[in-house]
Every structure is written in C-alpha cells, then in structure tokens.
Image (cartoon, rainbow, N blue to C red):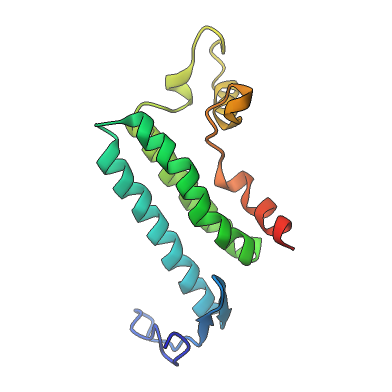
Length: 154
C-alpha cells in the first residue's frame, strides 16, 4: 500500500513520508513528492543508460530511433501531471542522460558540424533539435518542453 505511513522511512534521514501515487502524480507531503519524482527520474535515466549500453555499438541509428519516442512517452505523462517547478530537475537529468547517449555515438554539436552549418556549434545544436520534417534530428531537449507539456494538460 503506497499510502501507508513511512512508505519510504528507510531513507537516510529516517523521516516519515505520507503520500500516494494517483494517476502518475504524487499526492502528499513535499518530502514524499520529492522522493517520488527522484525515483521516477532515476528510473528513466537508468532506462536511457541501459538502452544506450545495448544499442550504442551495434546500431546507433536504432538507439536514436528508440530513445526519442520512448523517452517522450516515459516523461511526458510526468511532465503533464506535475507542476513544472517539481519537474525542472527531472528535465535537466534527462537532458544530461540524452547528451551522454548522443556523445557515445558521436552525435553532439561539435561532431555534427559540416560545410552546410559552417563552424557554428550553436546553429548545429539548434538544428539537432528541429523536427525531421525541417531537416533536423528531432532531438528535442526536455528542458524546452516540460513546461509546455504541463500547460497543454491544463
């Protein structure tokens, strides 16, 4: 029973946390909500790392094709059902994990610079974020979308 008192009392601070998960959103004390968000964040980051470990060497294209839609599916629900102030750290951690995954296969702004983009890393990074229909790589940063996800659900 996730609403039982002390559900996470085994944490180092030994404090009780009262709350429950309702439809993908934590309801309860701030300590419970923070712990809930941190556990979800850590779970998604672990999944990104696992998928990267499995696919980085064998199929970089499959890695990027898998990460973008799967990550959006995993994270968007949390972004829609929780206040942006609580999701900011999660978005930053997911972006960091994605950057690490892209770097493992050599796909980051400095590696993608070409004659077309000149030597402007900022332009190249922006192009990576564009949808594929606009000749981008559709690698949209979570920090640019978490607030819009919440706004779209209100």
